[in-house]
Image 1 (cartoon, rainbow, N blue to C red):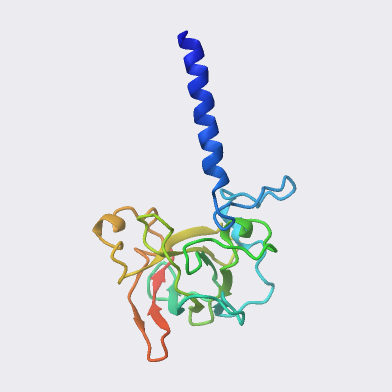
Image 2: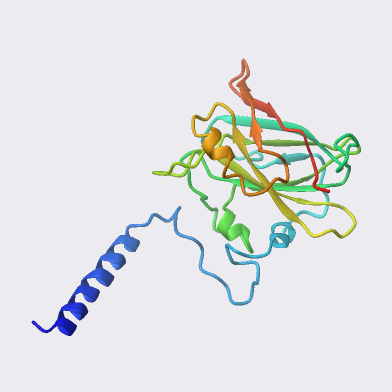
Length: 217
């Protein structure tokens, strides 16, 4: 058989295999279709898109799960955000966070818009109080299926005064075996430190932890 024909046959088999593999992707894994009319409907959209859908009125509490039932163990994270000097509490900082569900997927309700189509239903916002404090009420996220990345919560900050928003290091959990020296070497940004949080389970079964950090200079 001529080599050119062999190449075409092999290419056809490869493309067919890829098509079969993609057809088995679960709905929870499959991203939403991108809308040409929404510049934020993109997994690589600018970080400012994280704050487009934020409520007009916020307080220090981010209730990601809210009052709806959500599978998974409850998690409450608290902390203080400081100014760059590391000492002065920073009020009115917007904090955005999103994470996987208890099975490791960015599952959706179907009503998400903008970048939240990609971040899934487990997302929320809060604003630090006059003492720079914040609180996140949610569930403990699971690792991605068949992956070696620690369970984590993505987060971004928007400082007052019109400053450009930015991502901070992910929240990760000290008791996760994958949060080791090798992982800590891969932390992509120094904003927020390592992001590692020591957590403990309360008598009621809720995981609690604290993360204090300063904004970059």
